[in-house]
Image 1 (cartoon, rainbow, N blue to C red):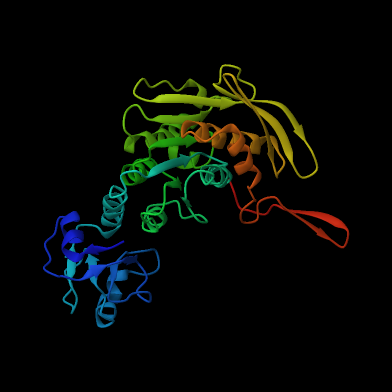
Image 2 (spheres, helix red, strand yellow; image 1 turned 90 degrees about the vertical axis):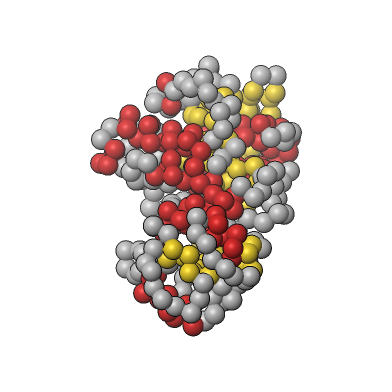
Length: 332
C-alpha cells in the first residue's frame, strides 16, 4: 500500500489536506506509526475512539472516526467506521486489476476448501489466503489489506451468522468466482430454516459480475436446486451424476484418500493427505477452480498433495507408538 491521505479521504467521501503517505492499516491503537491509517472501531469490549488522542500523540498518519474528536492528527469523519473499513477494503481491492479473487462460503468445510484451493492456485499464482478465522467484516478487510502487486490470487473465506453479512463481504471484496461448500444447519436459530441459510449463502453473488462462475456442491439437497441464468453454475459431487465435476473410484487409506476427478474428457488421479469423504468434496471444489483458471490437471494434483490440515483439524501424530488424531476444532 502506498496512498496519499488525500486519496484515502476522497475514497471515504471526505476532504483532508495532508501530503502524508500511508502504507499500512491498523485497528489496534498499540500498532501505529506515522505511515498508518488507523480505524477507530467500536468492538464488544473496547471502543477505538477512546484511544484516538493516544494514537494522535504517536504521530499516526490519519485517523478514521465516526465521532468528531479534536486531536493533533488528520481526521476522516465517517458515519460508521465498520462500514468505512469495508468500503476502504473495496477501494483497495479494486486497485489490483489483474488480481483473481476466489470467494468462498458454506455451512461447513470452508477452511479446508480455502486451504486446498490456495494450494492449487499457488501452482500458477502467488496466492494470499484468509488466515485463521478472519472471515467477518473486520477480519476480511484485514486480509485484503495484506495484498500487494506481487499477488496474482486471493482466496477469501466469508463467514456469517445472520442475513446480509455475506452480501456486505462480497460487495467489498468483489470475487471473480465463488465456492459454496454446502448448506447445513449452522445459524438456523437466526435464519429460521435451511432455505433461509441457502438464501444467505447465495448473497456471495451480490459482489460478483454477471457471467462469473460459482462452484457448488451438487450432492447437497439445497444447492442442487439453485438456478440462476446470470451466472455460470458448476456443480461438483460424488453421488449426483449430473454434476459437471465428479469424484470416482474413491479409496481411503490410513492417512490419505485417493480418487479420480472427472470433468468431461479430463480424468485425473488425485491423492489428498487426509481422510474422510467430506474432504473429497473440498478437493473437488479446489480442482474445479484450478481448471477454471487454466491450471493443468497434473499441476492441480500436485497442489492438492501439498495440502496440510490447519489448526487442530485431523492432525495425525504418533506418540509412544500410538497413532493419535487431533481433531478438536470447534466447528459447527
